[in-house]
Length: 304
Image (tube, rainbow, N blue to C red; front, side, top):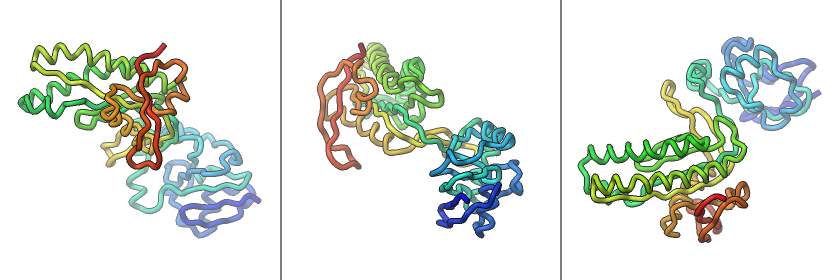
């Protein structure tokens, strides 16, 4: 019989023939949430299959309907509907009554957001260089107007190459490429978008000079790597975002432009995905805050 390891409880039990994961979990004495009684009318029994997903029976029609509605990744299953045919490791995701209220995806399903999913994406960070000095010259309302004008100009290049702006952080922004739509080469798309953003910035400078007798520039950093994408935030105020070391790395690459005196830098991971098409300038071997060792970053001047 298949062996089921249940996390975070660290309980191991041998499954019985045609027994669901929920039935096995409850038989083992695990307080496994199942608000609807195990009839696939809710998602509170959901588990992440950390090992052995190929040994699970296919989704039932009831589970498939809920999975499509809530945007489940293949490794996210309803324990009440999943029958194991081989050894597996599963992790309960709803641990107490507060969890039930917080992550009941029936409430979030109306917004079309998805639960956490591991993906490999290209992450682009852009920040305004010298904006503090620029904004000190302006009244607050003008500062907000300039920021809105800048973000308005940056949006189309990002969208044109299949990206979307995930977050605004003061005078900076983060954009993702490869989510929600899968992109054939998100790394190359992100670089093309970055170059188009620089061109858009150059086109904006005469307006700034005319209106404010001063202008600014931007710095862009791009990395490609594994992230977890999911809905984050208080119920009713969720948004989709990406979390993980790759996001932090992309932010550090953007900051490294200041040291290298460049406008657009990328990681080795971007070169691995699109390097033969990139026109490179200088390279920088540097320490990245929060990571050990040195990393090589590359200036991108164009795309062939």
